[in-house]
Each structure stands twice: as structure tokens, then as C-alpha cells.
Length: 596
Image (cartoon, rainbow, N blue to C red; front, side, top):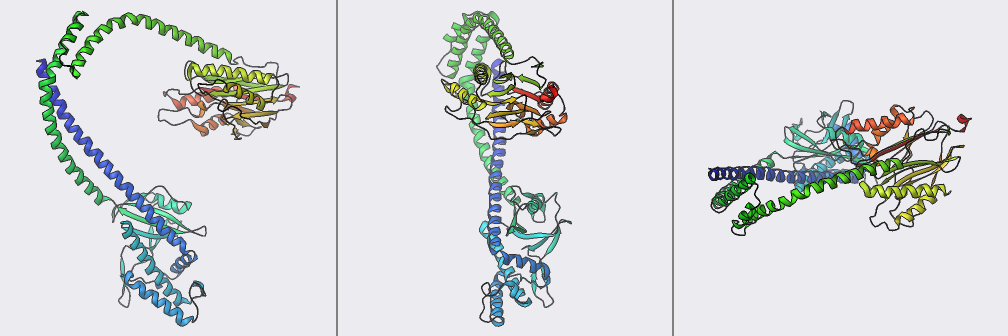
């Protein structure tokens, strides 16, 4: 019964495999061919539109005059249906007129468009329209596309476009019986449908997007490029291509390919199934019986029987021996499990101690300086793992100078925490010996580079502030921009120029910048874990949300401000895991006057 059941299961698996393979192969083939063709269409649209836009811009003021004259004398412009054949005659008519009415002068050299009389301008415009229609059709043929046109807004307020060059081949008959193209259709273009068309015109910039339309020309892509002459918007060069017929061709090709694939899969699957049934299934059932026997008796000697009955040294034979060896190893595993569990508990305990030690190294008693009424300060650090690589520090360099430090070590876990301890200690020692911020960071950089085989580095922002005057110096070594609030104004970022991160390169000279705080000014410094906090949708908390959180209650004291910002981060992140340490420090300078 087991053998028959396994045989049926394998038969079902093979059938499902064949069906699913056919479906997936067909879907992926269609998607790949469809995507490749559509990408080619998009590329051709861009090339064509860019080519024609360049030609129009090359005409310069001549094209500007052409458009202006068309708007003022649209009824005088007549383009024959066979404009290609009419182009040479139109050119000759204009040339003869110039020669007869402006003897000894050449158009474009001696006379300009504005110098021509109305009839001369009409002949030139008709010749130009024949030329541009011919150019558009030639371009479509060269690029193997179907439709190209030039438009300009007739009324931006009413969202209407004038189709100045529109080779749709709609025609009208003149009073003298001539059949000419219908020019200057004014059409309402819905911005919901023609989003990229209007964006191209309104911004005057090339767009990356395409309008997808279903109209009388079928399913088409429309691409529009603004035409600028001497910095002024003249109109839009647009091109379209239909993709429906290509989808049909792709589908027919995919169906043919799938029929061949299905036939091959059915034959191969049938052959493979019968071979598996004869040569493999029986041995698998034997292994299953022996493993079940062991599970019931828990007798390790059964492992030797499994190995002895393994048969040929093919995959199934190796599998049988692996089961036998696994049973033997299971005994050793169970014996070692208790020892491993105890070791894990010891490591967990050590990590808990390390977490506590790291927390104890950071200042955590607030208010930090009860006798210093010039300042208010609060800081917090939430590690992503048991121990983190971020740290903050603040301490008195002397009676009147306060140092503020925040830093972020590359990497996470215990190695980063050890590097953090060294960096924190060196920075504090250097500053307390009287070195300037720039000197301190320069010397710490050289010390950390020595023997830094793990190639850790640390981004640092530090400042030393005179509590009597509010003057100070800051150094930003590859760290995030600090935020400052001056007086009653909102917080904003201080986007000063960065130096390289500490321990990244030996011999670096770090520079310091002056900073001045007036009574009531506030600083907010942080690590990248704040702005790079990520929610379940893989969105970053970001600069905008951080500044909004700071300015939601800008008068909040540091001890209230940081929990408020952390709460907004937690609400944004939700149940997503924390990937980086989140460290923040808030500082208020009250000034000496308040103290007195």
C-alpha cells in the first residue's frame, strides 16, 4: 500500500510539475518579450522626439516666426495632401517670388522673414509646412514608428492644445476644389490622461514618463518633449506608437512555443516517471521502513542495518548511509545538547552584563550638572543588539567649558562596542588635556588607525562650548548634521561641510568651525539610526519626519523632547525590527545672565 501510494504521489507531482512549468514558462516568456519590445518602443520614441526637437531648435528664430505667423494667418496656410510631391514646387515658388520682388537679395542673408511682404511670408510658410510634414513622415519611417506631431497650448487656462503639425491625414476641400490637410485643430487635453504632456510644457523639462492612451489610434504610448528656443518654450514635440498588434504577435509566438514545450515535457516526464518508479521508489520505501523502525525502537544498532542495506553508491545509497550516520550522530548530539545549552546561557548572561557595562559607561544621571544653571541636557541610546556601537558623552573640560560628543561606530555587536569604548575614552582624555576639538579629533584618529586591522571607523560630532559666552567650536567627522533652534524660531539643520570619519585614514587633519549660542538656543544631535529607522514598507523615517517631530513641540525641555521623538519613531516603525542603534542628545543654553 505504501508503494502504491508513493507511486501515485509521484505521478501527481510530475503532472503538476509539467503543468506549472508550462504556465510559468509561458508567462515569463510573454513578460520578457513584451517588456523587451515595449522598452525598445520607448527608446525609439525618445530618439525620434529628440531628433526632431533638435531639428526644430536648430531653426531658431525662423521656427518662432513660423509659429507666430501660423497663429495669426492660419487660414492662409495650405498644405496639399501629397506634400512630399508638392515640396519642390513650393520651394521653387518661394524662390521665384524672392527673385522677382527682391532682386539681388538672398533670403536668410540679405532679407529676413520680417522683411517679406504678406505674400512672400505666405509662400515661405507653405513651403516650410511642406518641409516639416515631409520631415515628420520621413522620421517616422526611419524610426519605424507611426505618428509624430507638434503642438502648443492654445489656451493653458482651458487646457487646450493647438495641433500645428498633425499628419493624421484629415483633409478638407478648398473653394477651388483642392484637397488639403486640416491644420490647427484645437483639442482639450485632459491633464488626468495627458499628465506627462502638461508636465513637459509646464516645467519645460524632459520627462521620464509616458502617457498611455486608448483612443481611435488604438493602445498607444505618447511621449512629449518641450521645444525651447533661446530659453523660451515654443511648443511640444510629441510622438506615438501603437503596441496592440505587437502584443498579438507576441502572444501567438508564446502559444506556439508553449505547445512545443508541453509536448517535450509530457514525453520526458513520462519516461522519467517510469524510471523513477522502477529504480528509485522501491529503495526509498525501504529506507522509510527502516527509519520508522528506528523511531519506534530507538535502537542505535538499526543504523548499522541501514548502512549495510544502502545498495549502490548513488544518491539514494548515499542518503541511506547518511540516515545511518545521522542516527549514530544523534546520540552524540543529545549528549552534547545539554553542554551547548549551558554554554548559550552563559553567553546570554555575559551579553546582559556587557549591555549593563556599556549603559553604565554613558552619562545617565539627569540633570547632569545641577550646579550649572547655564545648561539643560538630556541624552538616550537604544542599541539595535544587546550592545551597540553608538555613544554620547558630555563633560566639563574646565569650570567654564562643556564638551558635547555623539558618535557612531561602523558595525554592530560586541566588536563595535569595544571600539566604541576606546574611541569614547580617547576623545574625552584628549579634550580634558586642553586640546582644541580639531586637535583632539586629529590625534584620536591617528591613535585609532594604529592596529585597526578590523577597519572599523567612527563618525563623530563634538563641540566645546564656553558656558559664559556661548561661543565654541565644533568638529563634524562624517556625522549627521546637527539641528539648532535659535530663539523662538523652529529647528533647522546646520549643514556645514563634513570631514572624513575618524579611523578611516591615518594622518588626516580635521578642521573645526565656530559655533555661537545665545541664551535660549537649543541643539539636537543624533546618529543615523534616527533618520534611517525603517518601517514594514521599507520606508525611512527621514529628515522631514525628524524635523517635524522636533518642531511639533519646540519648547519641550530635553527630558521631554527625546522621548517624544523616540515615540514618533516607534509609531512609524511599528513591528519592523530595529536595524541600527538610535542615539540622541538635546542641549539648551540658558546663558550666564539667567544664572546670575
